[in-house]
Amino acid sequence: MKARIIDQPASVYEDPDGNARPIIELPIGTEVELGRIENRNGKPWLTVRLGRGVRGYLPGHTRIYPFQHVTLAETTAVVYAEPSAESDVVARWNWHTRFVITEEVRQDGERWARVRGPSVEKGFIGGKTRVMAALKAPKI
Image (tube, rainbow, N blue to C red; front, side, top):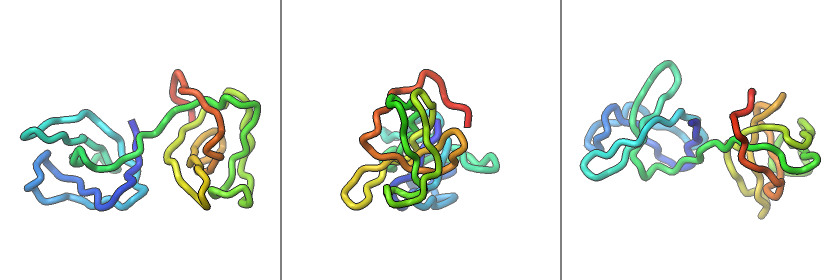
């Protein structure tokens, strides 16, 4: 399962041990592939895979946003370039379009969802857009 780092610093360790030196620091927004959870000395660690086959461990308290595979439950949805209805429209999706929510953001007091889906690598839909859990991951 993919997830986005939403808190800093996000240190990745070679071993699930807080005394080890971090092998890399991940900035906010970094995407990681999550593996299993391991417990060491009573503390949880998330196994992660980064690019180029690099593997490591994130402390269990690291704040992440797991990607959500969803299906549009409205007749249409407008996908914007930025989290603002004033920004450019990058797509219009129809009922049952499958896509991924990769992050929730707030802009000017409104909720938005960062999305990835058909013909859209990065876009935003309004936070009140109705969706339902997808039975299988969308093809992107």
